[in-house]
Length: 567
Image 1 (tube, rainbow, N blue to C red):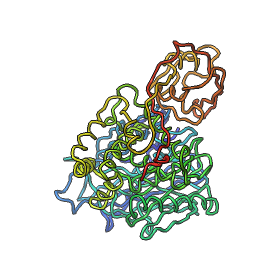
Image 2 (cartoon, rainbow, N blue to C red):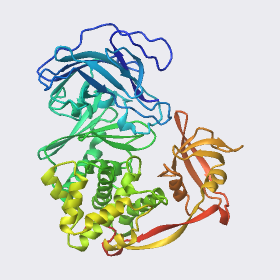
Image 3 (cartoon, rainbow, N blue to C red):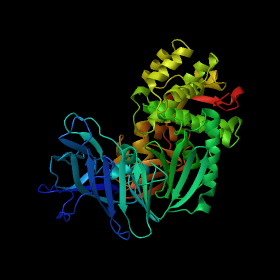
Image 4 (tube, helix red, strand yellow):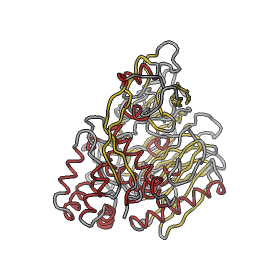
């Protein structure tokens, strides 16, 4: 299991959550106040231990904060795990001067003479399976050290009296094993000092022996960090990043000056990627694989780089625009045309229909794959309406980014649509609150594709669980097998991850992945069994008419758009 465990040291209260005796760490002086408001000292345990610990000593100088707070609240982010064992940061023990809420990761701390001082200990535990929040959001070991999201080490800080956030200049000092260095995505020249503690807490951090490869883009710099690959091995990735940034600038304008950090790890059985904070990306997988922009994991690289332009205050716009950029940049970078250029769009629209079911609304999109595909569907229709009046989505986004910076606010986005096409803001609201799949064929036709609604058959829920999987129960929220029939290749507790190359996070998505498969044909079902990935080979049975249900789909051909989204 992968988690960061927090031990808070002070005087009297000890909360034991995992069993076994817990000994309070020896007393030591906290960090002294400096010119910065927030000073944190990280003291790393030996590099040769499987489960390292990091002692954190802090000094929060609040003498210049008005009105002076009598106390602060430290919030440690919960790290949800795929096995369901932990729904929050695990406090093995706590002994703080104030109240400790272990379930929510909340600790009250007093302010004495204008300064809050203290210390706590973080234990980094790891196992082989991937967390539900993605490798980018949890600590994990690499060949030469550790990749750690800042929230695993550093809390958010708020006033005790009214709950308002506290932020300011911060210094992060480290004591590391010999030969190790510390880097993070909140800064480049000076890894120890930042203007905002919040940026430091929401950055990705690397501790250890990491190779560095740099891509310069005018006033911007992209750093590739890896403990698993040397600079020569990173060269193809560096080239893809350079080409993707060039294409992104052509679509959405130049990057703002600053530093971008991409941490590349060899970990896990699947390719994953995620944005950490606003300036960091973690890319992980069993190897570097194909670095074509339209294949995994190159496709992830392009998507995450898209977030350096596409950031918004609501998930559907944030991920929907990054998905649209991913598709368009992939076709441009690989010079795809016709059916090849339409392939990913067709796959995404099929996935959208699978996830939408009969009543899901894009406005409700918050987590998982739904904000990506739901947001893309809304933006396809938005682009079609804009294009009909001589405008474009990228034009709107460029204007808002130049005027307001990032993230783009949905309220400002809606107003900009209305300014160009009166009533389009109200249409946007209708797409966001539409129950079930938005009718996409007219939107796609407006973009120059040839699209038509077709009827297709997918297996019923009962047929999938009982006849195809050989199970007797399925937790559809977690896609976890709860009971199996005798002779089934599956076991109770297996969590379904993918069918062949398609991720299947819902029963509807699994039904769509099984669409059109002939009886007797084999397929690979990828599951997580306890702490390890397992691949099972199953055979499609003869279901009969009762084993299928009719659903609507959209058939897409390249049309005059030649498979490309942009004009």
